[in-house]
Length: 226
Image 1: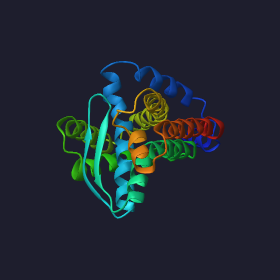
Image 2 (image 1 turned 135 degrees about the vertical axis):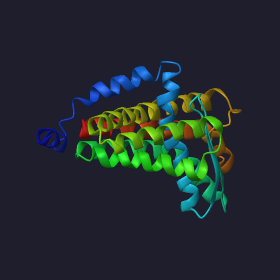
Image 3 (image 1 turned 45 degrees about the vertical axis):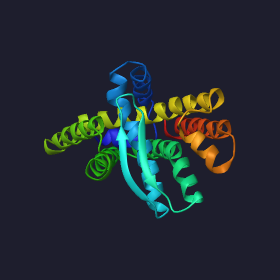
């Protein structure tokens, strides 16, 4: 165990490429993608919710769907606050991926596990109300509590590696999709088009911003943490 901590602390994390490869494969398998990819949706929608609270707004509900889509229903006090909230989803996902790999690289895997657990529990108790979202969160919280109770540290670490990798990969895939949609259609109800309505800046610009920052985060992770 001491050797493992030294390896992580020195950022010698080549083993994480295996988990990134698993995350890529999972992202293209139906049903499996739905089960695991929801963690990214949870992080994305939590970003909207936290931005609303940080700008003195309200969070009414969050919905998580089996398609890995999600909706955060929030209230904002001003146009500027609405812009911040709309921008926060993809940005928070990229920043969270950076945080996750930073914690892993510095040997704080279990802290990250408990962070996932706390976010799931908060969403379960406060915000998520649709059937799939509730069932997914309840299952995640119960499974995590089981691992905590029986002190199954190895499984906790393995799950944390997989979930962190999925968040990183899904942040790239979803930002690519939103960028493509912003170029091909103006009728999609997505963050880029919401930002276009709020700022009058074309949606494809916002799509490009989301794409660039997600790839920048991935580049930074690979360069410094793997």
